[in-house]
Image 1 (cartoon, each protein chain N blue to C red):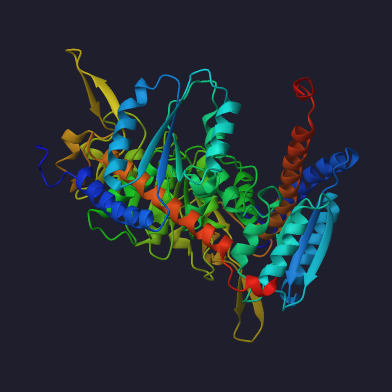
Image 2: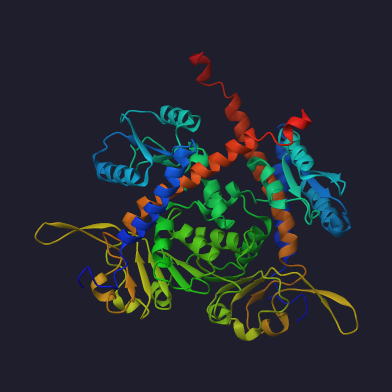
Length: 305
Length: 305
């Protein structure tokens, strides 16, 4: 179908709205003495991530957030990287830290991620951040998961009681989507490679999220008529003529005539993910401000001294 | 049905097995200079929790774990309680801390819970503990959730691909059960009061967990033949003659002829929950030992000085 078909749930307008909201909040924060700054860490050959980082920088600029790149050589040890992160944790100019993946094989990415202070964890990937989502504090969530949920919200569907099926149970996409939607009142099922019949579940879903990394896994006959389909997969597919294109986990050609909404790939979840990263930076800033202000609050304390 | 019916999935033998395992580990830890100790905190009128605390003390004794009660008067402030917990966090004799509920209304129980250091959080309720479950580190989980999963495992059913439905989406029971079972490979759906048709889900469940606090909510016609039903509800029911009895969230009379396994209430999840608390205490102890040993490890460090 042509890309201007209204069934396409495109990321750009959702991202633009979020970035405008972030811009207003960031400008106000700058005025009040709390300029937001996002630090991007890359290790080794950055060619693979360069297009992502440049895009983050451009969007941060639109949102009024300083963007600083720190590049570490490929031979940087995990201990050196951790020490650098501790330095950024202690630096009042750094609001949030994002670790660009992939990192070289000798860097244990999860341990490095956990070195980021929870209040500076704008990727929403610290165990404490994940735990807070379970406790219904859903303001700061992993970017891709939160972006996927924003796209569902853009349909206007009432999330309370909505039958949602998530295909894929990764820690930073599938599971957080499930918790976010449970907090919003949806009835959620999480399927994965061990599920007996994925189709039996997807066919009853009012909203279907797919994040497994298998090109065109979900066909039209696996989707309930009228459903909203959020495609989180990004797969490179090589055509017989040798050309490469990016396709999602959903077979758009067959699903488009069944679903009421479907996110395009590319141009769906991706743009919103960057906007959520910037929104998370403002959430982190507000938490740091609250901590600063409670630390220096003198009301009541002076009398006690 | 008589309580010796084999369809009853009773807690006592599962609890006894876990406590025996804890006993062996605790005895070894004592020999090695790391005696485990569990501290129970009660605030105000303890009559309501007294029977639970006495039971915990008795089971801790069987498991070879010291059990210490600290009772605070009803007028204790949240700040005083938090300071006391910080003291216990810093006390090498304290392995784990359990806060008995209910606490007086002026005590914000979630904030107090968060004051317990994650390494001493034997209840598994710190956000970081919950987040770790999402990351498939399922060794230490909220006690009731972990106990419910232990009972399902006692059936011998293969959890991989098992169709599981959880009714109830509380942060410390329903959701953790869901993550624990996702980590084990089950396909999990979480239902709650906003779910359109709970029965449509429960009827397709190979394993059904119910934790909503509504007496006899689940009837026989809502259960798939041959299912395992884990009843986590504890409700006081008053008979027409004025007598009181404890019933679960499952209508045992009608479900018993449909299900292949059903946990009795009382005598099902309850006894296992206490055993898990003691097992969690050993998990906490092992983590504290690992931290102690890595702190004092001299290998490599001496050379660097």
